[in-house]
Each structure stands twice: as C-alpha cells, then as structure tokens.
Figure (cartoon, rainbow over the protein chains, first blue to last red):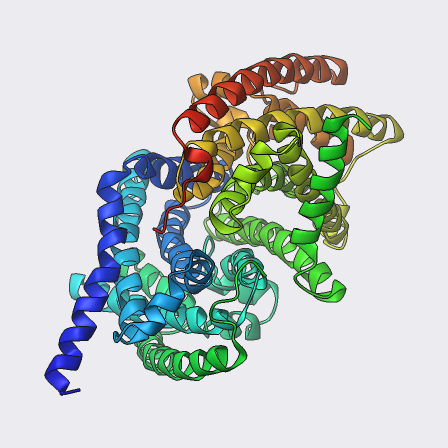
Amino acid sequence: MPLRESLNLFAVAAHARTYPRVAWMFRNRTWLIQETLLPLMSVAALAYVYRWMNAPNEYIGIVILGAAMTTFWLNVLWSMGAHLYWERDGGNLELYVMSPAPMMSILAGMAVGGMTTTVVRAVTILIAGMLIFDISFHPTSWWLLLLVFALTMVALYGLGMMFASVFLLFGREAWHTVNLLQEPVYLLTGMNFPLKALGQMTHYAVPAVGLLIPLTAGIDALRQVLFRIDGFLPLWTEIGILAVLGVIFLGLAKFCLDLLERKAKAEGTLTVKWQ
Amino acid sequence: MPEPLRTLRWSTWLGWQIESNWADVRLFLLYLVVKPVCGAMMLVCMFYAAKYAVAAASRPPLPVEYLPYLYVSNACYGLVGCVMFGMSYVVISDRENYRMLKYIFISPAQFQAYFVGRGLARGLEGFVGGGITLAVGLMIPDVRAHLHYSAESLAWLPVFLALGVVMLWACGMILASAVLNMSRSGMFLSEGVAGVVYFLSGVVFPLNVLPKWLQYVGQCLPTTYWLEGMRRAIAGPAPDGSPLADTPLSGYTNVELAGLLLVTTIGLVVVSQWFYRWSLRKAWRNGKLEETTGV
C-alpha cells in the first residue's frame, strides 16, 4: 500500500476508535459525577491526612497532583491495557484483526480517546483541589511544564499500548494483573509523598526501580516544575529518562503487538472468550 | 435446602472460583498480600514523610499513636472497598463480559442471594487481605509499640464484625442495584462511592478536622461507627490527652457505639431493600439486564 494511503488509513482508523470514547463523554454525562467528583473525595481524605499532621502546604499539592496523574495511570491500565481483553470478550477484537487497518492505529485511537476524557477528569481534580485546599501552582516555566507533561503522556500511553498487546495472551488474569498494578505502583512512584522519602525509609534502590515506570519520573519532574521543590533526580535527568522511556515503550508496543498478534492467531486465542 | 441458601452457596463457590482460579495458589496468595499491604505502606510513607517535614519546619511533632490509627483503620476499610466493589462489579462482569446476568435472572436462582454470594467471595478475599495487612503492621515498630488493645476491647471484635457484615451487605446491594441501570462505566461508581465513604467516615483522619456540617454527615454513616468500633477493638482506645481522643466519637462507650451502628445499619438495610426492588424493576422494564456497551 502506498505510504500516503497507509497514513490515511491509520488516521481514519485511529479517528474511528477515538470517536466512541469522546462521544460517550457527551452522551452519558453521569460520568462527570461518578468518575470526577466522587473520586475527589478520596483525594480530599489524603489531603486532610497531611492537614491533620500539620505538614507544609506543598504536601497537599503533592496529593492533588498525584490524584490528577492517577487518573492517567488508571486510564492506561483499564482503558488501554485491559481493553483488548474486553474487546475480545465483546467480539470486536476479531473484527479489528480482520480489517485492513493496522492494530497500532486502533491502539492510538484508544489512547487519544482515553486521554481526552482523562484530561477533563484530571483538570477537574486540579481545579477543585486548588479551590478547596487553597493550593497555588507557580510553574518555573509553562513550556517546561508542557514538555514534561507531553513526554510523560507519550511514555505512559506507550506503556499502555505494550500492556494491551501483552494482555492479548491473557485470560482472566488480565483483569487481576491490572488490579494488581495499582497500589504497588502508587507506592513505588511516590504518588502521594515525595519520592525521596521512600528512599530514606527503605533504600534508594527502591525509587530507582520505580523510575522504570514513566509515572515516577513524570510526577517527580512535574513537582519540581510546579512547586519548585527538590526532586529525586535533577529535572533534566528526569526529562531525559522520560524521553528514553517513551521511545522504548512505543517501540516495544509495536514489537509486542506484531509478535503477540501472530502468536495469538497461531494458538487460536484471538477469539477465545470467557476464559 | 431453601432456594436462597442454595443460590448463596453456589454463587459464593462461583465467586471464589472466579476470584482465585486464574492463577496457581502461590501467585494468588501473593496477589492477596501485595495489594492491601502496598496500600497500607503508602500511608505509612505519607506519615513518615510528613514527620520529617514537620521536624524540618520546627513544627509540633506528630502524635505517634496516629500511625496505628491510620494503619488499622485502613486495613479494616479494605473490607468495605472489597465487598462494595465486588457486589457491584458482578453486574458488569456477568452482564457485559460473561453475558449471563439475564439467564440468572430468568432461572429459579434468587437474584439477590446471587449478588450476596458473589460479594461474600470478595469479602473473604478482603478479610484475608485485611488480616495479612494487620499482621504486616505488627512488623512496623511504631505501629506495634502503640497498640493498646486488651482482652476486653478484643471481645468487641466479633460484635462489630457481625454488625459489619450486615452493613456491608446493605452497602453492596445499594451499589449493585444502581449499577443495574448503568452502562459499563458503572464499574467506577463503587470506587467513587468508596471514596466518599473513605472521606466522610474518617478512615484516615479524625472527624474533627472536617467542617462541622461534614462531621454531622459522617456521623449519619454506619461505616463511621463500624470503623471506630474496629479501631477500638484492635488498637485500643486513644490515650488520654492525645488529639485522637478529642473526636466526636470519643465520648461514646462501646455499647453506645454498637447501638448507633445497629440503628444506622437497620436504616441502611431498609433503604437498600427498597432501592434494590425499585432498580431491578426499572432495569427489567428498560431491558438493562441484557444491555452491553463497548465504550
């Protein structure tokens, strides 16, 4: 297929997969309450923990930022990682594979659609957190903030695409694996506390391992830019880590998808449901 | 055997199979341990991070008895989250994933008992996870050193556990009923509601830190009394003079606390039964029992 036609097909397929996720935002508005306002309460609970302990105000900011970034992680896990597993059970996966559109375009569409709804969620959490807890963000540079955020998203959704392909081989364990990747990741990435504290309490190797998850460097770098506090590593080192992780995860996603799609076809697991 | 009991028995068995047979026993046990323990460790890290920051800023030191408060409370709350999520997720998985919900509805099985059985399986998982989390907590010196339980306080544990089971059944039924009329996005409802309960019941902070009107809302929830009862049973009462002894619930005796839990739980059961019947009828009339979405 000529390059132009391939690119066009990629864009059309990605757009088609993005559409239901974005359209859903407008058709089923109860999500704004159940997925944005209600989870805000657990964020508030953690913020009140710091308030009760009389911790500096930046710590409440850390919780708010962590909550906003958690929404992206949950989206990557549930709406990217586990989604092909859902699609298989729903009977859509075989249609995707049969269609001429590349699977990467389906994953890209899922990522863009998921990111759109998640951005709304994250911004609502940030604004509500700022208003309720009187937190102010003073970024050292808006461009730097944008760069860190964009790199974090690329690396994070690259990881999500890789999960999606790996989970093609999974049955019900996909659901449980996704479930398992929540609390340990919150701990390892220092989602609600400075990453340095984890190193002080355990060993500096523990947060260093956490740097393999893009969220770790992303959150720590965002904190450095937004709150002007010392991070676990210098800011530009973390930006470099994010860039490298982005390239690695996107490459791995493509490789895994090709390999595992072939393997799933050979083993006949593409259409196996309800395992 | 009466039909509800037979349904309960088989749905509990089914729920346990679904929860546990996806992996070998060792991996499943690891799964049971890792999730709740990591959640608890995150709070421990928050405590120490704040402790260092407070010391660095020369502010008054944190009361050390706050760490066991935080830890025990969070471990017990895991059970609430597990049962609430478990019972509501049954609707989504059985309707959208396995597509069995409509068949269960038209079978002689008792529909509510089916949900309860599936919730019991999750409850068992939560119970084991909570127990392991508490055992791990004993390895943390600052938690172990500030547990003041006694034989008398531990005697209240079965009372609060028994009342808690009824309360969790009612909470789970309310959520499962709501999800009957929602699409797959309803799977996030239980997490959202769990967040509200986490906040208003003072799971990780004493209620007196909240504005007065929110304290009153919190005191209407049975989970608030249940968690206070469980905390007292496992960690003992807060020491005199501690800021933790100055909360809206600290004036109640254990008998009063159990009484308040009983009254609020009865209220919750009545609401849950009415809401279940109303939601089921609505879902049946609107064809929601077999609706699948692909968002």
